[in-house]
Image (cartoon, rainbow, N blue to C red; front, side):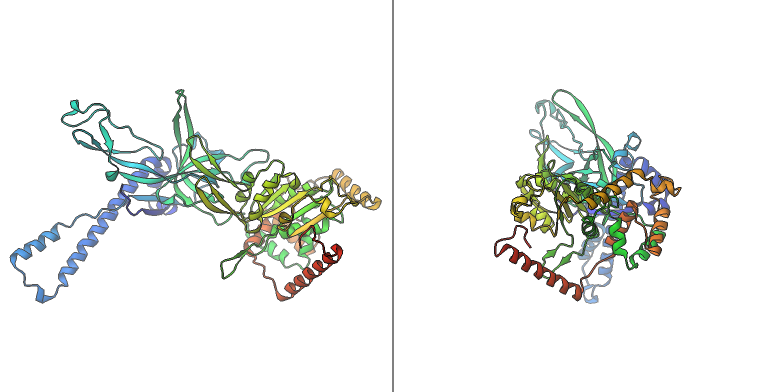
Length: 589
């Protein structure tokens, strides 16, 4: 088995198109035909370059010899000339061409028959990876009787195979029998191959539809470069994989053969210069905190929602992750828990957070979620191979995970997310697969008390059916109560009736429904709010502003704020100690 050094060459498609548009067109239309030819040409060019460099170096060495050593016999001179004329062509490893460039993105659900065997670029998230295997590219076979040797080239893609000859091709083929050849591994050539499963990004999935996934084949230098949860943009060739089962059924499955891989730093939201100017003006407004907090779920009203909206805003904007000199990492994201009575809009808060979370937000229910679905799992396919598949917290890396009905989860499933909520990592050690995945997410959860409603006649320990270990992972915990008060109930009813009786704002202002999220409308709205300090940001504007803050702001805690936090923390600890009279508090602080 030849395990020589692997060589890769990155090719910019834009430069190739500027150099020769005809070659670029042939590459787009028939990549499977021309990419191997290009790789062979690159290998020949590199061998020629190394050969010329070697010849020039030998000539320089001969010219720089000491004159005292130039007195040689004719026999020595002939040997030197023979050595110079017999410069062997250096042999290099096969070169892998990897393309990159600004091709238009094709979503996975938009891959159609017109894209087959053409060069396209698809975005997605790697949700599972298989172990790296070896694939034969050139086989040396030898007859077991007459020792006749043949070389077979394996062509046809990552999943292609080849059949050994049934009869010997040697001079005494009649005496060798059937299937006399055997593979000689030491003289054969292999390359690495790995299978990925790539899924659509959560923000690209239409509402009410399941995310699409596709099988992806990667080879050689790009194997083991993207663990589950990694966002990728792959330049690939859609091809059919033909599978024949025992009952003679033939199934053709579409898979993507990767010829280029890019890893975007983060999911991007395009911002126009007008939007950036408007966002900058809004950030300088003295009441920006109040403007943003009232823009969070504006349809939800009530005195108890003010602090919840401020906490949601802090959760959506995030903080600054820190890495200490000893290697310890401190999370910069906060976790929020809403615990209280029904019909207090807890689920609506979670739905809104998942919609405006930038760059990604995932909403799930505790009753329909498991430990494997939230973190990661190791699954086995039909061929018996083990795959590592990431869950919701891995897919939402860098965003927000909203878990409704948190109290309905099984205790063993809640324990599984302890590490993800504190260390923001997920450790896996199953079926021989040991790895650590990133889960840098904020968690916003909603739960009900033990008896459905909060019972004032019982203690907090009896009302809250959550362990102290999981409660300690939440930075902010809100006890949402539904008090029966006539003035409060009348205010909430008037607000709800006003929402149902009012017309949409976009129609009142004469703005078309399709254009209300356009960059021009968002920039004009944000600039108007920044100038007047009145009004609320739309959902699209708020999401873009959150992305603007997360990508450009790195908040730093000053000394005054630190002293306030210290004094407030000590004060709360003393109050809890006095209320509990020395007993252990239900909610750890």
